[in-house]
Length: 116
Length: 116
Image (tube, rainbow over all chains, first blue to last red; front, side, top):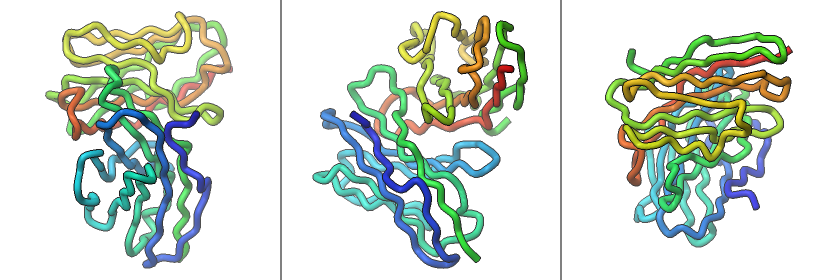
């Protein structure tokens, strides 16, 4: 079974509008972390935001926020006031505490295209 | 440098040749990771180094793949007898401590490997 699922292969959003990118995950580990990365056409993975499984509040970083619904196992990324520079691939990833290797498991990604 | 650096940025090789990919992590980061990104498989974990501990090689796809990390810093990923299915972008990441809830992995720009 997929551990991280991103159901939107591609999305369009109008500049200055908000957009939500979906991410659902599957784990039996009570302690885990969820990460979102942005990958522009240049190829570099840029860390955006982190949510811990025990965090009581949704994470926020500037225009990025996480809609974390633990019971539903979802961690959707919300980008407010979209900018043309937000056009990129977005990846949701998870690290499970019981995973001794500490590696990230990635979803398939969502390509976001911001329209002027 | 301030970020993770990788070299070369692009590598074209012939099937059957050996290649070496280099990663220079962020100064002070004790953990280093290699991932592979390909069209068919998405982002896959390959190997993880943490300090002086034995590396976690659980993600290496075959015995043609190996990696070492010298002096707890620079790492080299070696692929022997390359095959066309090895064509991918190889991403290196580093993190401060290699564990803990908020230990974020920061990625380099990647090496694009093309096997002809």
